[in-house]
Length: 321
Image 1: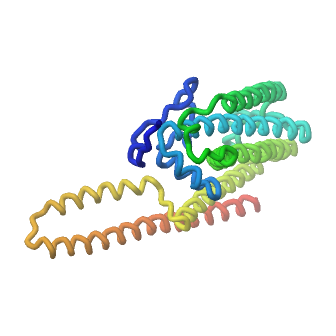
Image 2: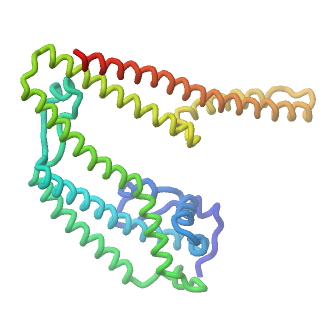
Image 3: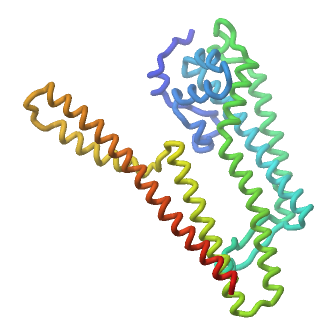
């Protein structure tokens, strides 16, 4: 019988993934500690805690991780296959496939130097992902057909296996959210980049003068810089509204913590009064540091908005030339 273990023990034990896979093959959300892994499972589906709280041994958690790893592979290959199918269908429909210009030319015209994939490469990846999808599905089937490990069989009452699988599925779907967003971003960028190439070529087909070319390139550069700055401004605003400060700000906390340690080692004339004063000063310090961090972000936003207005004005001036 497997002994029940506490949260601290679960946290300390390392996770050992499937034998044929190294830890480097795992996505970040499957590399987390057992404690965080359980928390993520609980938040993945309503009433998931009724199942997850019973995954209270290393063996049970590893069993859940193995299932999650297999489903991750299956869903990830599905995302890849959908991506290549999208490339193929949009290329057939729009006849955009791929394009390339020199890096120097792309820089002068504020555009990417390449986009898309060749038809041959897309077809190759469609065949590869079809085979990988079949393999991933087969591995899940083989794992499901294996006898359950003793740690699962000995659970009383028995584990609600369909609900357990539903939790793992929801957990993996949430874990792959960023990956899915990256795939969606690549789809949009394909259309935007191919449009840039087509429009730039259309401009040069009109045989503009050197002065017109200079004005056009300056306008494109101004618009490009404006968009880049606007994106950074939106990121900073989101950080303020969501209370998610940049990781670099943690350095400020670390440096001040050292000062705090030095102050706490200073001689005390009165233990009670000193403790009360330290508590008040510590609270004031934290409040001022927090306000200082947000002030920095707000100043950065103000500076960015000034730059954005400058490039917007620059684009209008070049348009009139």
